[in-house]
Image 1: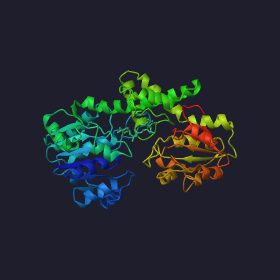
Image 2: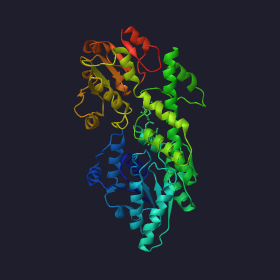
Image 3: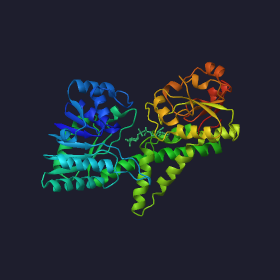
Image 4: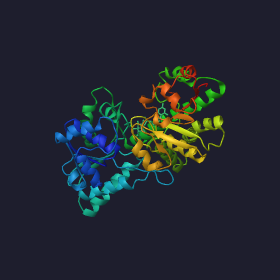
Length: 439
Ligand code: UGA
């Protein structure tokens, strides 16, 4: 079997490499020549644990290759996955120009039957736009080549994408023909060894599933952030409340950790896009609108606590930030709470020292020379008035507080991820603020 994956971004590259791991032939197509050359050399342009080793192995076995030519890439392949970006346009809806551009190019070059599968996160109805775009090109060529479209949303998490792909909780596929269903069943069989389901459904439901899943997860987070804020006011401890509710299987103990708000390239964009879609249909998704506004507020939570402690004017004060990426195990800083926090601190006249185990290079693109880039977490605390823990990298869990004591001007920590134990911090004589717990 041979497949083609168009787009070697996060989803495309992980999917292509994991498919190759099952023994099939994979060709990945990308318009970016530099990226294609890098990948052919086994260099992975993103940070994702385990991906470079997996890619190297499959390159060596000749099961995966990269090209800039879509015409070459789709030759003889049974299935073509579209995994190009869908950035939000100004009004928050997903911009489909790349997805439909690829669809048209497939239509211009295909010679035989293919299942054309949309893997990018796209609004409900997009697969049919893909179908129309391919049909239009075939009509221009005056050829009648059979093809099917399908929708196959991705549920990968950055930082554990390989595991998520190889051992999925479920695989969702929207199809409209038996032929397409048969091809996708064959392709995904090797990933079902853990007994988890491969769910076939209609295309609309499959496309909707992706948005509903991310929106539900974002809702859990915003709900917990709101509860955490109330916990602070009434004197409850959100960690205990979290455990108290999470052991109810109907609620579940995942994605109910309060913090500094959700970030990343998915939740903010997808929540916004679903709200948009609903508005277009004259339906107001009020729950999701609240999810968004709670998240917006939550990103300022640590700075509010800083203001309550120091007052509005932070001139002459310096802060050390631990963690810049939107979550651990990634260098991705898209919509990261750290960016909002840093911007607010700088606006109030403070100086900022930052450290992240992997996102330092990424940070420099955005933050430029507005902050001091520290060489490690201790360096980020030299002569600071407080440390802010923003991303919960595991290496921040057990710092040497004796060293920190000596470096910092004050023994003061604002913990946006509830990593430390308030009792322990009291014993260490730190003034300690966290989220949703008494200080
Ligand atoms: C998310 C989904 O979890 C994936 O299933 C989905 O495939 C992906 O989006 C996508 O649509 O491509 P990802 O954005 O990589 O994955 O990151 P998550 O691990 O979901 O975290 C998102 C944000 O929520 C992070 O900022 C994280 O810190 C925050 N979060 C997560 C919390 O604040 N509390 C929690 O309990 C969990």
